[in-house]
Length: 102
Image 1 (tube, one colour):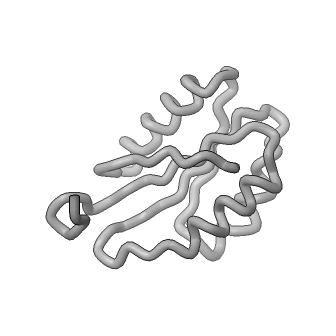
Image 2 (image 1 turned 180 degrees about the horizontal axis):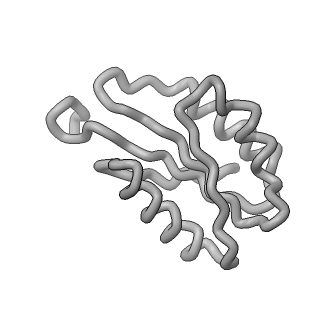
Image 3 (image 1 turned 90 degrees about the vertical axis):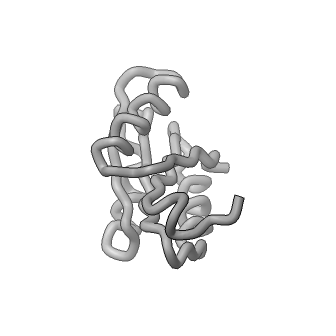
């Protein structure tokens, strides 16, 4: 499918993570280099660590990128992805992508 203004207007790239600060940083850096001229693209970090290990990475990029940070307290990838889906709906996204942080 070719991406243009008519199929997708807003996408959330949800990066689910747990105590992988270095890998997350590289992932966000890579995502920041992507360019979708007709699509509003936002990055959502969903941290599954109650100690907020991913918050440092979020703070590094929050003034440079359209990026959000939330925590999912319940352990497990399915819980984290469900939290991401709920947040994507709140943010008005038309699509969501789940890359890995490695």
